Picture 1 (spheres, rainbow, N blue to C red):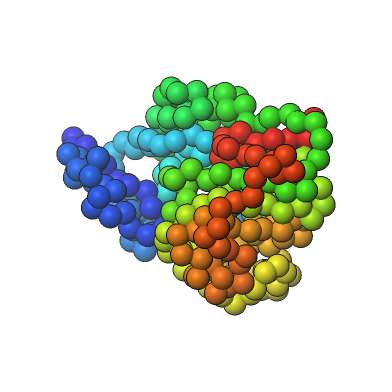
Picture 2: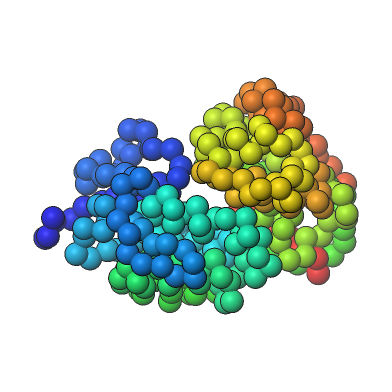
Length: 306
């Protein structure tokens, strides 16, 4: 409606937020995006653009979110908050197709030459998203401006790499509570480190996720279906038909990780759902000691071979 502020929470293909989770936004009566009620608006690099109807009907669009490391987009934030967060199902699935997310140019923390980021920015420009307001947790400040400028400035400010001398046969990644709700979310800590440019790990090293995972595998149907169909090391997900559905690309990342390292999950609230798909999960505390590389902030500060 012209002249009226409307807040739309971008869900992507994730589950709807609960009333408790939406409580901080209650004064603005937020709507939640619907990927199956989307309006088409163009195509970039083979990706069809579509955005949830509430956003498509807006006169002006401001995207608000967090700028942090992202497995595919390099850095989250900018146009991603609308193009993916409020995107239609076909848009999100095309962006996360196995061929795109496994492209060697799609790299954590990298914007320049990244085709995933390029498609997002192209679609955002076509949609007319003029302004981004992003919070940088690492820097403790907000950044505002045209979306590509904000993400470029965020990438320069993040400083995610911690040079370390030596090599470890195991690492313990402590997943913060905000990311430890499900294995889907927590597993990003392992792939962020394991698939980073130069992790200080020996071949076949063990990565231990310290994450409660009270929501089990997660609510992303494509991810769960891929894990149920294909047990570790998930090789079929790299060579067989590409997995599809919400979150399926995360299972592909686990398969890539498994070609290099082993994965364990410790401190689980209930390890049974994870064990049911062949994961090495338990409620036991993670191992400690000098033989283990401690990674206390795997979503913002990653050790790299010096």
